[in-house]
Image (cartoon, rainbow, N blue to C red; front, side, top):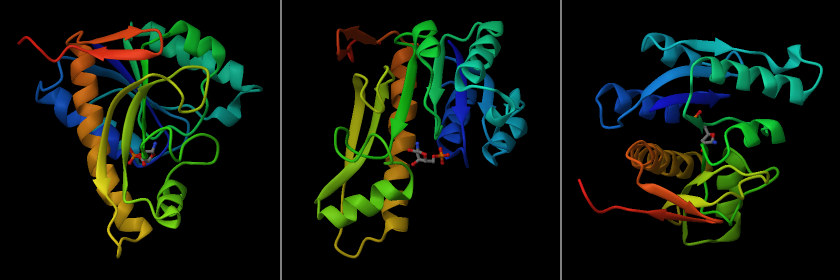
Length: 207
Ligand code: GRF
């Protein structure tokens, strides 16, 4: 499986994928990493000897043109699966069409809770604490035209404890993100995830 990864920030989810492709837990290879920011995550790719590009979205007249450039780079490398790992821009319709059902995103909440516009990074965890919810967690899902609305692949939850702060809740959730992003990409690489309309069917049986 040829994997392309989009990031915007620190890239700890990317690091989990790097570690688990290099050790063959995931039957695939990260062929290209692109960041829309000169992010520290790109360093992680470089250290792993993976082609890592900073393509500044501000260099393009429109988002559509920026996304066409991303598609071009991924097509050039025959990418089979695009992973959004802490990527904070919305993909264009063309991009989503080109990679229909082959784009997955990790989100730091139990979708449909605390997702959609404005819910990213620490704001998610602040809202969870504010809400008094007993649990939170992370969601791995296919990307469709909406924001955080595509078919859910995996979710895992964690208890919210009364003395939790935004920071330590973010750390607890990040740990889960790393687990399910690796598990989800592994299942995808084994062809064990099937899509039926808006539902994903995971075939866990077999070798
Ligand atoms: C994480 O909370 C992720 O879920 C969100 O971006 C944050 C940063 O992730 N999409 P990373 O450390 O850059 O992978």
